[in-house]
Amino acid sequence: MRLYLDTAERAAWEELMPLGIFHGITTNPLLAHRAGLEYGAIDWREMAGRARALGAQELHAQAAGPVEGYVEFTAALYEAGRAEGIETVVKVPLVPDAIRQVPAVKALGGKILMTCCYDAKQMLVAVALGADYIAPYYGRMVEAGMDADAHMARMLAISRAGGGTCRVMAASLRNPEQVTALSLAGHDVFTIAPAVARALLGDDLSAKAYAQFEAAAAGEGE
Image: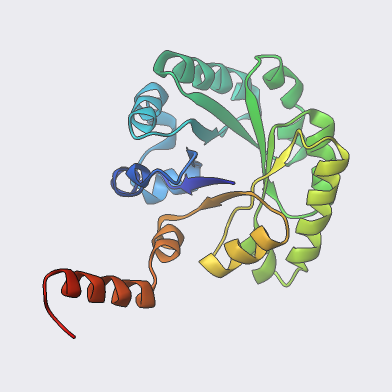
């Protein structure tokens, strides 16, 4: 099982990464914008170092801007990871112009994640490209009226048929129940937003039981 924290908010990193349940951190331009960051001005070495210091084993960042610059972006991202002792993974959108850059990106020797996935057929592309991960947007698929579970099941089957070298990272998850259901269906890689992470950690009955135990330990209650 691998869980990733899906945010560029440093306060969320510092709150949630020390829990020790996250294998890494995933980011993209939209998450950076929400965190008040200018994507093109991000110092990826500084980000990688901070992620590593908080226990992350991987930092995923999405290539953005003109596709002609993807190789340069990726080279800098990989170098930032090497300098800070953390695996950096480049995220490439599943659109034709971006896909055409993957062979040159792959030649750099680092890990690749294919993102913006909505359909099981895109798993075939990711496997054929030799990508390490693919990120289907489960929550968005559900909200678009798609049979998201059927697409996810097909993607998992294609992954297994391809030797499991391209792992399905379920993304755009709205609540812990979706994470649990997908886990029961055989998925084992998830990237989740801070709000979902907090909901995953919290349970009212567990909190009540804990309070009772603490009260008993202090000689209070029945």
